[in-house]
Length: 214
Image (cartoon, rainbow, N blue to C red; front, side, top):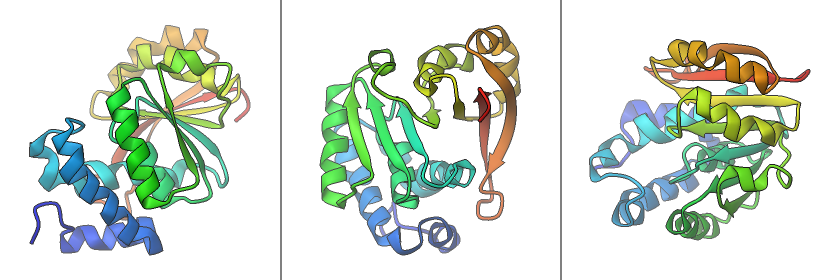
């Protein structure tokens, strides 16, 4: 059995999340485990944990996203979470925003190989696209603390929508430290949610920041 293959427990969760696109998602994981490692997008130690810690951990967040939403993923890296969203939810319109050229090149190659049509890649810092990108939902994972994240994500919502930031145990502390910035950026409500409770042993912690009437 390959090191990055699905376990029995993970397969059940993956079927629940990806459905008929599971085989396509397995191809994505193959990319992560090979060229993704070779080109430095992930560390070799992550290979056995690609499904549980990364792909499924990210993809379950789509249960919090409305049907047909436009989504921007800031600091996409290896496509986590944005590319997993495109796989799990063909109805979503996904924009990956990533500043590093080598990561953008890899993402583009993977998207073409998988034949995904509901996703695009923009190379640059998110600040470059504040005028160009206008979405319903903005996401980020392992980019920065919420106090800094608010400044580089919330403007993409243009006054209405929500940030879904994938976080860990420090979520409550980050919210407290970011309150001043969040108010300045027009946040109406900030709460901590969990995603994937019905399919994952360890659900994903998400900080949701709502802006405007969304």
